[in-house]
Structure formats: structure tokens, C-alpha cells
Length: 611
Image (cartoon, rainbow, N blue to C red; front, top):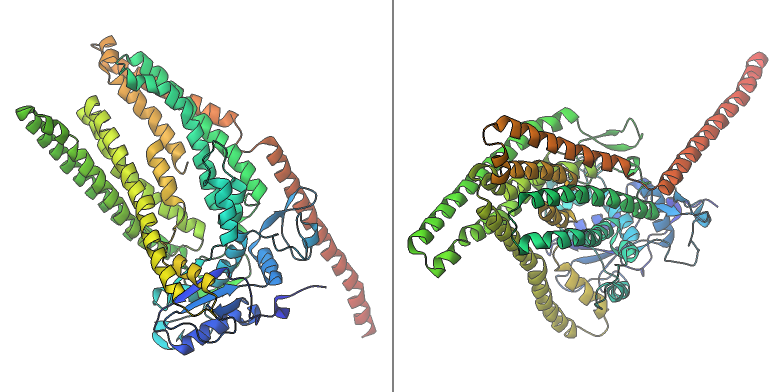
């Protein structure tokens, strides 16, 4: 029997909460009732058809004073239909990967009507998030109780509620037992073993799992470079022949590890089903706004926004702003060099121990300023990219990544290029590189590890005291968990974490960095006194030889990249098979339609003759 969303019940009083919605303390009752009705309403009526109840009370009576916290979940059937709607790809009993459908659910590996573990924790919360974010205004002109919070057809309700301050935050709720089990297999016991990437993916999702997979791979990939590069720093060799060998190995290493990672990444994403999820399943992002209309490709109702308006915003506002920020970054860099000259002059005049320590102060101050500028620019870049009004989340992320990477690259590396190619001071280059890298790592560890840990422990003590003062007839364990988690900082995604690796490696953009490293290494070797001594009179010959070597190394890099396929052979074969089966299914569907049309034509002709 076919199950439809209209047949589902949304009035269950007890369910497993997956997502928490926190409202402002002074939200009006009519607004709460309207939001609740939109969340539990049927899909055909413009609702999300999810389960919804206040915290601490399974019978939907009043919550604790000043605690506007609400739990959101979904029934098992609703979750499975949601998995089909978002295009989740799961493994079938014949070991192939296919888009999940509720009608063919028995064909998928691990599915059982009595088993609640078919969908992972991350997939369930993704489905809830997808449904909440795609709640859009229909006929409403404003949010009930808030005339200033204007609405128009197609506007994301959750987005408007957040920007109006009515909804404080929406966050996923942890599963304490599953999290404890993951901790035990992941990091609580110190052991040299691989990370449980599949378990991380099941709990946190594919994006987080891919990041930790890449982090693990990158850590192991650094071992050969560390072993080979250690003698160069221990013995401070000035023989540039050895540096040529090291630079050549660096080129081959950087190319091979990226190509091998692509193959490993293809294996993981195919196994998880994300390699097969097409862009057609990507719906408009919550922040996208425009006039409500019909998408000419999908036939679905969604906001429409002219692309020329977006291009005007990008080229007339965003691009000039980025250029202005880049100029300001270079201006700050020149101030840093003035400080270096001042510190060096002070040391040469006095020659004392404390002035030798003072030589590192400008680099430390500059590293701190770089971190501050990077964080401030990130907020501006996010605002501008959101204002550009991109339809898809992927387009939004791509434009944000481009803005941030360009600025971060110039902000972090411009001084090193200036020292290497303008000042030509190799001693200052080593000192600045070491100081900037070490200082930035210390600051990142303080801001991302020690400070959040200390704040969480401090807040946890206050929450436990408050819970102990509550009455015994409430669900104190769930209350404690929600109150503790709502005060946690919002994790904005893996972009900043990848950015740290990018600045160290010097995959996002790592491939571009490997090309830049070839050019800069060749240029630095060509500027060395030993190489210049070989061509004392003809600098043109030296430049031609350096350019020829650089082109040869780049050619070697691209040959290696071409020789190592991005996807393993067995993955390519499985993808080709699925594509063939999709085409065959489409042909059969078209033949069926043609046959039905041919059957109808004689009947119509008979009717005409009878008439």
C-alpha cells in the first residue's frame, strides 16, 4: 500500500527529539501558536509535517518560566519519506548504491520495519533541518504578532524568524549514548590506530567525516617530508644543489598525495552515497529570496531572482570591497616592515640580549594582527556573499571560499613574498615564516580548544546546580542536556579548519598552492648566490634556464596528476553501470508512454466515426 504524507499523524505527544528551537523570552503567544501550526501542518497545506512539543512537558502544557525551548522530531515513516524527498543514496542488497525510495525500501541493505537504525543520526537531523529551512511564506504578509517582520510569498520563515530575533537559534540535539560510544572508539584511549571515519560520518555527517579523514591522511602524508626535510634544518645546509633535490621531491610529493587523496575520497563518498547525489536535489538555500514563481527546469514553486542583479552586486560592490581590503592588508604589511627596521636598528646600536629578543616582537605583533584582520574580514565576506543572494548553497560556499582564500593568502603570505623577492633576505624569511606559523598555531589552539573547553566546564557547573533545584517530576536529564548544549558555540562548518591546513600547507585550493610552490622554489633557487655565480654576466641565460626548469617541473606535476585517476577503476565501473541502468529505465518509461498513446489513438478514432 502506498503511504503518503497526508496520511501521517503529527500529534504524537512522545517522540525522540532531534532538533531544538529556542525562542526569545518575550515572544507573543499568537506567534508561538502560528509557528507550531506551520511546523506540524501537512505538506500539502504548506507545513513541514513534523512533531513538535515544548521542553520538559510531554503533554504540551506550559514550560518552565522564561524557557522558550521546543523539541522537534518526526515519525519513522515521515523520516523515510523525507529521506526520499532529499535524495539520500543508500546501499542496496545487491551492493549497489541507489537513491532511496519508500516504495522499494525492502531492497535496501539493513532496512527492517522494526529497526530504527537504518538512517543515521546525521541523516535524520539533516532531514529535519531541510524541512524547517524550506518552510516558506504563502499568503502571510507578516509574522503574526510582529507587523514589522514583513513576509512575502516564497520567503523562508525560519530565516525571517532568525533575523527578526524571534527565534534565537536552532540546533541539533546530541544522542548521549551514541556520542559516548563514539568517544570510546575515537579519542578517549590513546592508541596509534586509524580513526572510526564511518562512525564519525554516521553521527556528525559526511562533511565532518571527510575533514577528519583528510586530516588523518594529511598527517601521515607529512611523515616522508619531515624525515627528508629534518636534516636541512638541523645542519643548515647552504648547498643549493641539495635544496634543488628537496624542492623537486616536494613537487612530486605534493602532487601524488593530492591525487591519492582524491581516490580515497571517491571511495568514501561512493560508500556513503554522496558521490551519487546530483545537483538536482539541491533546493534553494534558506537565505535565497525573490518573487515566488515556477522553476522552468524542475517545475517546482520557488523564489526566482534575476541573475543580472546578482552579477551587478558582485562586480559593483563585492569586488571593489575585496580590492580595498587587499590594499589595506598591504598597507599593514608595510607598517610591519617599518617595525622590523626599527627593531633591527635598535639591536645593532645596543647589541644586548633583550634587543635580540625584541627582533621577534614585530613578527609576533604582525601575526596577531593578521589573525584579527582575518576574522573581521570573514564576517564582512559572509555578509556580502549572503547579500549577493545566491540560489544554491554550493554557489554561496564557492563565492565565500573565493573571497576568504584570496584575502587570507595575501594577508598571510604577502610579507613572505616581499621578503624573498624584494628584500632578498633569507635569514629574515626563515625567522618571519617560523614566527608567523608558530604564533598563529598558538592563537588558534587558545581560541578553538582551551577557551571553549573552559567556558563549557564553567557553564556546566551552573547548569547542574540549577537542575538540582528543579522539581523531581520533570525530565531533568533532558533539561540539563538542552540547557548545556544551547550555550555551546555554533560550529559554522569545516571551512575554517580546512583554512588552517591550507595556511600550513601553504585541497581547497591546495592544488593551486602546489603550483605556486613550484614557481616560488624555482625563483628562490635562481636568485641564490651559488646559481648566480654560474652566470656572472648573462642574466638572460639564467632567467631562461630557471623558466625552463619551472616549466619542466610543472609538466611533470600535470603528467603525474593525469596518470593517477581521481576515481579508482571499480568506482568508475559502478558509476557507469548506474548511469546505464538509469538510461535504460528512462527508455522503458518513454516506450511505455508511447505505447499508451498508441492505444488511445484508435479509441479516439472510433469515437469520431461513431459521432
